[in-house]
Image 1 (cartoon, rainbow, N blue to C red):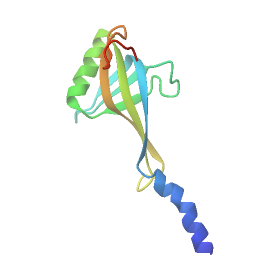
Image 2: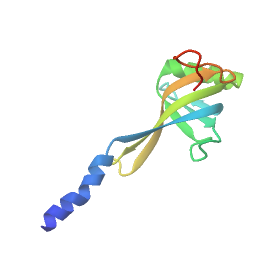
Image 3: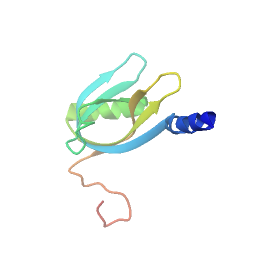
Length: 119
């Protein structure tokens, strides 16, 4: 019985291993760095999410890094889909924030279909 209870206690840890939570940030890039290996990091001022606002997120796609650099230099607004990954196995409790998608917008006038409707 004790082993069964112990096994149940470990289930939430197994569920969390490699889990991801995504969120969308909208704002201007206020920090930008590039490492030698091509990975860039950017920080976005997004008042709607104060816990992530101005915090660096990593971006491993070189093409998107170039777009992010341009947006940073031109002080343009971006819309970013980011993820919080938590890894339990091998790196106890490590959390990393990564960018999955980056979109440049001007005055929030761009939108996806159905046409004629705003988000």
